[in-house]
Amino acid sequence: MTLLLSHQASLDHLTPPGHPERPDRIRAVAKALGDPRFDALVRAEAPEGSLDHVSLCHDNHYIDELRHIAPASGLVYIDGDTSLSPGTWEAVMRGVGGAIAATDAVMKGEHANAFVATRPPGHHAESNKAMGFCFFDQVAIAARYAQRTYGIGRAAVVDFDVHHGNGTQEIFWADKSVMYCSTHQMPLFPGTGATQERGEHDTVVNAPLRDGDGGAKFRAAFDNLILPQLQKFSPELIIISAGFDAHRRDPLASLELDAADFGWVTRKLLDLADQTAGGRVVSVLEGGYDLQGLQESVAAHVTELMGKQAPI
Ligand SMILES: [Zn+2]
Image (cartoon, rainbow, N blue to C red; front, side, top):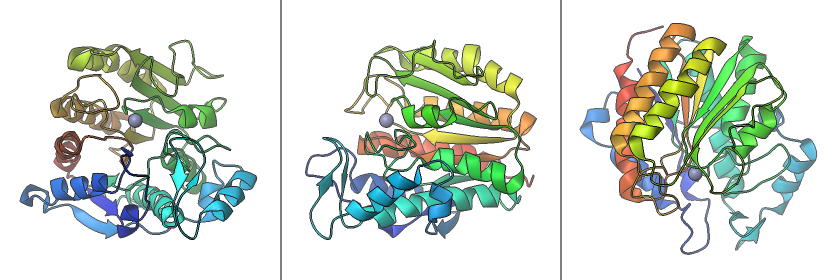
């Protein structure tokens, strides 16, 4: 059965008034997954990650700096979009710990797959830089952790957030053991993610989409480019950067997807994981800023995850 990891600390990372990345997002996810049809989820608290986990993908100097600038009150800004409040450090470390615990549960065969419902998101965080609401890259940390702890030879990160995961791409740019695949709207923040960006070993697969492209083009990008590349790579673990800001209601982008598109891509990734990865999928919440769109999309995503109930 699907494992759901979350933690109250996700509500304690505060952002300025009007900021889209806000605690209500987690309340919306909790509301969606509080529906009786999700009663079968196995729910657990995300443990706190360790500095050793974070240093799998981030520079120690950067980690120390971030750890020490968290304020005792108010907000400290790293850039115009990205700020820390007193509760940020624990929220971030619970996100890291949630991704680690999800990876442990899936790699040990305790759960077929897992969803980590924490905030802030992580895929814009580079090895030595916070940006785009993100501090540490949980999906990258989970991939590296799976390799180091369980001897996974090939891991894949698949990112359907509407923004390109520049952080994950940067961290694995020269690493042929991790494939990074992304659909994203372009042009849009952060500006990376062109098709020609393929990594040093052709293990970066970018499928940029244009504003208004909608579900048909999103699905075609997976069917024609990402899924065949993943198949060829044959990952032993699939980690999803599950951002839902490509939903048509989202205020930050205009890719015009519906919740059903997120269900569709989840099903495709589960099918591929069955073929190459013993069904092992770890999914981590990234963006999604319209509360209704987020609720519908998370429900569609987790419904598909729960469809895979057989033990590995
Ligand atoms: Zn996003």
